[in-house]
Length: 403
Image 1 (spheres, one colour):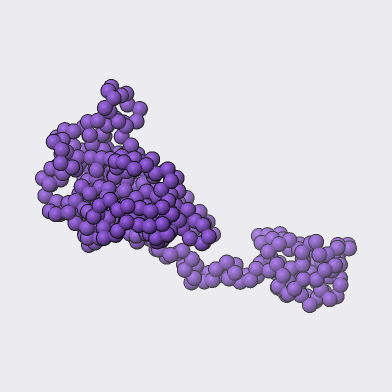
Image 2 (cartoon, helix red, strand yellow):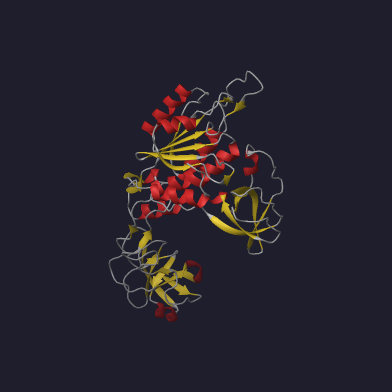
């Protein structure tokens, strides 16, 4: 299977998606960060009645001209005054209390003086002052929260105010991440020779998975042994919706992952893509499960995961599979390095109404430099047909801070 373009690989991945999204009901307190599966619609107006917005005295607006108002009672929040308030009368009312029948205005405490059982109006207020109107917060049948939104603190609070204790959300996809290579050590594992390196890929990709809303399963590190890697991949396919491997996809003697995948007789979505980095990526589908075989270099695997796996995680949760894109002005020139679509780590800033990108502090070299992802960073997209870029050119950027 020949290398395909980046656009073609994305199109193939989208066309392969035929998995129905699954929903589940969870308690509201567990819903932060989950994806809503239904619209949340107001069942009634809020507030349902005229309500006080502060402490003061509820009265009829026109009665302020009398100068003195008789106090006929006190109304704490949570209680109701069933008797009507007549001309020349007022009732002490607290924040959140319902306005009594016959009143239309609340005069604040600081605008009056109390004289026995009466108040003296020192400063009048406009009609309706400090009164929350019916439906001020929301109206009956109004869609308050739309389906497919990622739930934040405000969504949780609004649903609590609607007396919703359980909500329907999309089920989280399960992602297993498998790092391969005899040279890699787990964090905390003792190093026995200088050729060994720490396995950062599992932690990086696990963090990206969780941020995208997936459940992650961490497989044991897989040394360059075909049998062991086969067993781990087989178990991962049973346990998860998406299997991600790093390493073993190039053309070396110990690159077993590509051979193992071929033996599974999968549906190939991409067997190499004209992108830089991560051109040796392989994306396959086995039944309803996906395998993404990514390069072992940390920068390469991270970029490939962002481009392909995150949109699929989104889609499995009922979200749009689009990555957050923006247009920015290039502050440094850029020399195109290949005839592939290139993804370049850039510093992202906002100035005078425009986004800007530069390469300050970004190192050039192999695809192992994960530190290029530190800071307020984006991925500049340089199309395969693009020529060298000049200062002032407008470029497309994936906003990694918005993932």
